[in-house]
Image 1 (cartoon, rainbow, N blue to C red):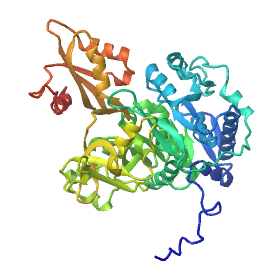
Image 2 (image 1 turned 30 degrees about the vertical axis):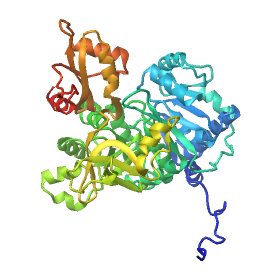
Image 3 (image 1 turned 180 degrees about the horizontal axis):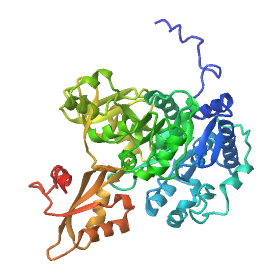
Image 4 (image 1 turned 45 degrees about the vertical axis):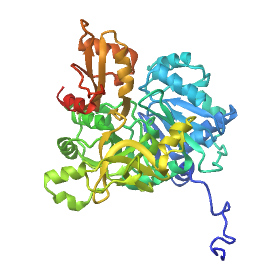
Length: 542
């Protein structure tokens, strides 16, 4: 057999092959548009030249402390300039960025610090009390760098004597940052809620993050110099990779510490925001704003929304308010959005029920994803494309995680059969669009955050008056979904809804606690299994 002539003497070399990574995108933006505003935060303005220099300074200062490949740098930060700088600086050293979820409680945060082996912790003063508790529980003893946000000077006491702005000058703004030797190297670590036990650490690689930068700008219609409002937490899937993506088009990051109506309207109007992302709670906050909080939006704003599609009434109100909606779907394991409801202009003329049905679908694969389908998870065969046959939604491609950190069993299970198993149940339509129908793991998505129903049930079962309980998702206009608990009390025992909710809030992060408790005989099968499908229907009217 003759040798392929296109392989002879045509090898990879430094001139024609470089590992994919998002880091170099900031370098390009800084060289091409050094004076263009990269970050707006209150009265602060940071140009791309300054952004790149500060990221290199932080990287250099970290490297001087011995941080490099294989190390983990954890950050407990809001959507602030420091969070954006960390997204570039940490991987510039070869280390891995671990963004902590600011809504979690101290024991879970302590677990993550230990599991990740955190060498450095950059912590915002708003969370000093919480992180102080977590550090007391953790075995890890990271170098702590205190971030004092000058735009919000009274948030709390310092967690450390080492101040972020004092730490940066120790670094070199011309630092020769490290290009990954292999694009498969880890770039970030994100923890996802599991249905049992501790959360799993999802590992992203440089290749996937780099490809997401191009995919995000294409999927969301970003032209040169977009203005992006940070309503999506950057700790969530690395902000769907948008902290890196905006450098592709030299966009402006508008930081937002808290998702509040007036701040959003002011930012949109004052800075001519072109894009934002978020869960249904962001829509609800905008639409339910008080008259004195609102401002007239005279330009169209692209709103990328995930989770379940909002009701038609909400979409109509968002459109009237000046927002153009794009429906995305994905998981932590897929770097955030991995599907896109690509809208066809011909669908605009459809009758309302048919149009609504089209909008309810999660759509087709993202530009950077190679495979998306719905399969029987046992036989690994694709379900009929009839829009009715249930199967598991599966992904394959370069924007699927490396795997779960220190958990080979869970990684092997997730990748069984050569596809990533999402755990979500859905159908495949004749035109190839997928649609979710249920979550096989009973995870409740509230405000874009995952809540394990089993975790909440474990707390309920510890209440002395509870004999049987089950937690399901209750549709919520503001949060998308909230936990609804169905509780059977022990004979002769008494408890009130307020008491049960307070019990949970004392033992869980507050957003995980049930918003509604229904005292009822929990429906079960003949073998004693709780029938959650019945409870989901009951929760709608609870």
